[in-house]
Length: 104
Image: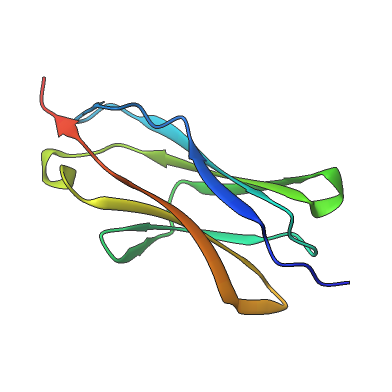
């Protein structure tokens, strides 16, 4: 039975990021069967480097991890985690955060 994802949440995102530091963010998606496909977007551009996925609970929970080092130009940009069931790809859910990046 195909089930749409119910929830997507970005975890581990501090309020303020320091430029040049490496951060690990996680997008947790719950409820999708089969497991959700997750993608990361920064200011409308798909991010492909530093991304890895892990599925748990028989595919009901998917964790996508992003390793990211912000630059001062990333301040104010929107980071989005999008999740979709691969069988029902048009029904996408997402979570988004505006990045606040400071220089040391």
